[in-house]
View (cartoon, protein in one colour):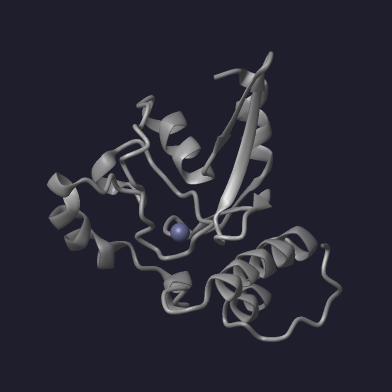
Length: 161
Ligand SMILES: [Zn+2]
């Protein structure tokens, strides 16, 4: 991984002040509500889910595409990951670790987990991800505005795009 790509990736992540806070991806968000990060190495262009990129960056492990990384905090654009796999917010969801993952899920619930993306229509979920991102891009880490965006409350500021 080129240093410039790592730096560019980091410039799109806004970390909450508390240890268990989310680290929110503020770059591109696709229609599935998840982020996208594009890297370019010569003619070799790749697109990553940001949480997968963060995980690989942190652990040095390349993940096969069959391995999913569900969010224990349930915020689709969170990329919070730490080196110790047992402490990671993003756990490898293989059959083998599924039970472990379920056991860990509640452990990683934080204040941002209160908003359920599950059950939202795809477009609505994507909209909430984008609203959350736009709030952070406009106001920085502002818990009150972030909560409103995650709850689907109508915005009072102009949308970036
Ligand atoms: Zn999170």
